[in-house]
Image (cartoon, rainbow, N blue to C red; front, side):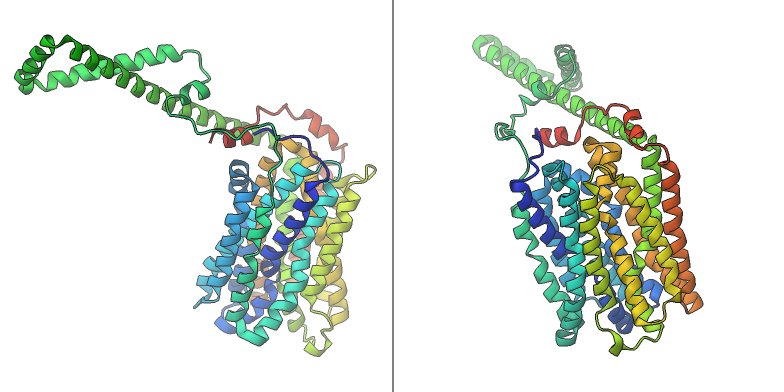
Length: 510
């Protein structure tokens, strides 16, 4: 499939709108899981560390499976993946309403919903990057605000639904809302040349001619036919007890030479078809092995780029320390003895709306030529690490709300992360590199909240937990800063030219 030049508009704005609503519908409940977290603590009576696994899995599993998600999007396209994932998210949310214990939620909410969200995130980011080039930062900022607006709305919506219909009814209604993802996915038209016809189904006999890359086809066919003849002759020798019957049939064939010639031609045609099929299987195996070798070679080439290597460390540490506030801030306020009457706006809602603002503003800033996007991303990491370390000193609603707003705004750096990745490795390797980075982000996302919960179970306070979180984010920011002190654009020039891309070729051959 040939991908034409990014139009930077047109149907691309429809892609932005439906991608926004896709992230809004799929990430609304998982990012606002802090409201459900408190209910699950009371319903199942488990520790904070164990209960935090549900929300962390929902955010981390999809990122851990990012390489698989990228391969699915590259092979099948954004539209089919989005529609299939919509069923996963809606089904997982509805299934969670019947959870008898916390372990059932690990599977239904953590794994099923999390994997569906990961597929949807990869699909929306990939198709948006295909439709936009010069306005890519703005487009990514707009679609990424969908999850933040979802956090703002779903935090209040889920609380209202729990009061009216209980926890089970809340999950059923939220799951039904997620079915609207199917309508969004149907509008994700793939960007491809209009004059590029869809690949036709090929007959098995024609496949070797279209897929073969070696010049010794005829030679291999002759070898395969000779092997078949040898095997058939050996079979004849093993069937010696039936020699008398074969002699009778042979005498009849001598009497009818026309029948014998026809029988011989059919045998030769059959042998040739079997030989061609055998050759096709060999070529297909060689082709798949070559694709795997190319994939491993490109992965090694990516890690030779010092900025990319520092980037995967930074995103891993960032997700260990930066994700817990959105899950645990409500419980932090309750542990600090903040009265519920003082809650003018839920802290999770403040994080959500400020994350939307941060994603939009940071995405716009990324489009300015005079701003180095990598240094902008590093600045958000360092400031966020300092804000996390300040949470133990916040003992009132006002200070917690202020820190929640700062953390929410800085969490908006997710909108420029695909932009940074694209500038580091190039658009040709975006799906490959982004899948690797999201794997490490998911690992950090899965470990962060349970670690903070275990710190609380151990010390009965969140102070040490957030000191640890702030240190992780600061360390990741400084490592990335040290790796990017020389002009980071030179890293792109030092990268070897990419091998012939296989992502779209695999899709076309399939």
